[in-house]
Image 1 (cartoon, rainbow, N blue to C red):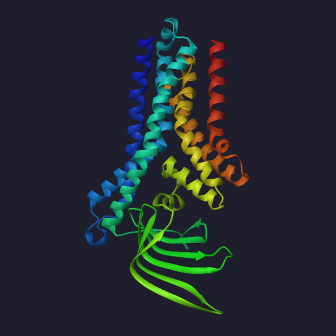
Image 2: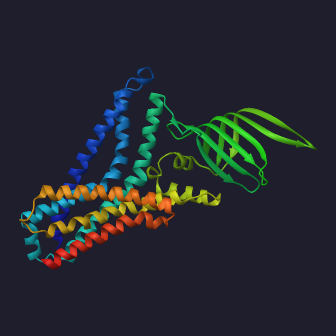
Image 3: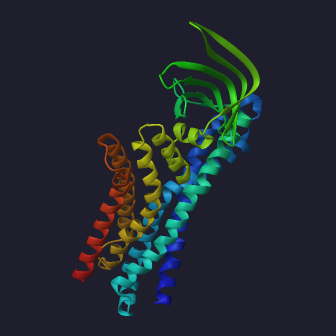
Length: 366
């Protein structure tokens, strides 16, 4: 069994690596063409080498999105080739039972699950941050945040705070900041404005800040304004929470999403969308396991009944349909207020049932 496992695993590894390399190279080319017009910008500071660097830093995000599809295509190619050349028939006559084949591929799928999780949770968020920092440093651009900016809320023991951020620098530092402070009765206490801020250890260091505080004296009220080069402001809102609120949640790590969901819950805000994204981050790597199971029935097709090209094409369609169904269920779950984990796991469950049903039918038929 060890020899058979090594044979199948080696074939799948080579095939998946080749397909992944081709897809990544294709996306690299598209991203390079899309970014090339920016070369020479900011008085020629943003050069071709910076364009290439930005595109390279974008590769891990594409790799994370593509891995389940490339695993499916690569595994289908190997299973179809083994079936067409009758090698899989020989393996079966040598003692490879359906359960052993399924167990062998699932063991390989778990390795792909770990790789996908590591890329999506650790490598991709860091590389995305470096890509934005590189572009911001040399091209001089900043991330614009909609028409009214990003809004975050925080409740403390004695006041309610509403934070508005209009821009982000490449390293994720907030710019053009407004902070509205209200008392427990809903009365305005103060407004803080700052050009930028540095966040560290639960404290925001507001730069070029202006604080306008409403002071009550007897029956009179007056506005006291204070200008400061640096003004500390205590808050539990972190730069990661800002990134989740502004950037695509799918590009953030699972831990950052979990902390942001806790922050929203503590402040009485809706968490449905972000809970779905959190569970998608949890279940998406497991889709690699679904894909190798989906590819196994192709090994039990009649060795002379089809060709590899049509099987691979079917695999591409299956991978694309899974990706689309994954996104559709996210939107449906958010609109209809489904249980977040169900909205994220449903596509994988459906495809697992379909693949195991096809596998069982082919085994019984043969």
